[in-house]
Length: 137
Length: 189
Image 1: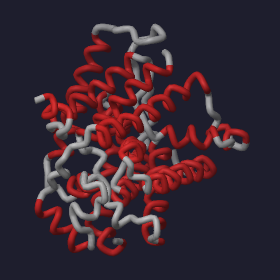
Image 2 (image 1 turned 90 degrees about the horizontal axis):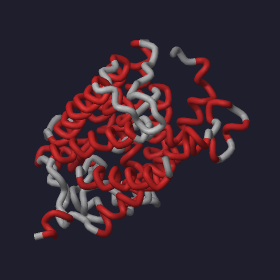
Image 3 (image 1 turned 180 degrees about the vertical axis):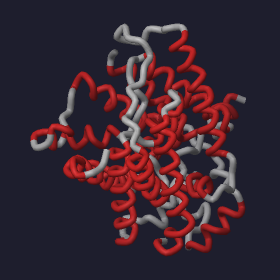
Image 4 (image 1 turned 135 degrees about the horizontal axis):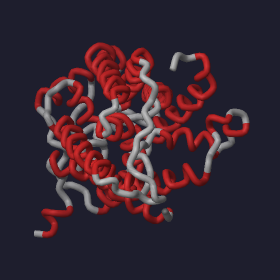
């Protein structure tokens, strides 16, 4: 697959994050206060339609680019790890009001202070890579 | 008439469909929808792969993501700068009131007026803003890598594949998010 394909899908993603308002710091705050259905509607629709689509692709054995079938490599189940890592992420998500995708889209929207958040995220990722062997997985 | 289609924000159902379509497109392109790995790739590109195999940038496996993220930034520019919604996000009035108590005025504290980010509160000349941004970003980066995915990888892709680990991770996202929003933010902001 050529880079231009992913560039175009990325442009559509950036437009979607903006026009859906899912990139909004305020929408995330509102979501965690359960004061609007907006974000739940977005995520719920995406998951329901996504699940139906993925299931159909699997049932009809549709071939994807590269010739393979649709598959998902499951993570080994470790309840403690999923809950702890998820909680760490959630604390950050609500603090900076943006998850990784929207961070980059906010930069494109002209909110350049988000670059400081991205720098923090890169440093957090680096730190994980250096200590990961000491964490339960 | 055309303006009414290009500028306004989308209904949540259209937005959800668009995200499912992105999942479909990336799946058909043979890739897994997940944004947080970008941070790992940035580590690899600045040389962290030499010391630690984990960060190694594999051109065949990782380069597509840089095109995708480049596109996401351009898409943000198109939708937010070239064709911006003339109205700010219509937040719930209780949310606006709660924000005021934290010292954030809506929508005035968003200098661009969209209601996307309170950049008049998180200012370049505020040490507190820097600390919050770096610490929050750190938690997102560390947490998503430990979780092996973020909102796109787990909440969208993982759940669409009926993954129990993803469901547990998303429950974690909400435990952390609710703790921060209801108990910690009032002391931090």
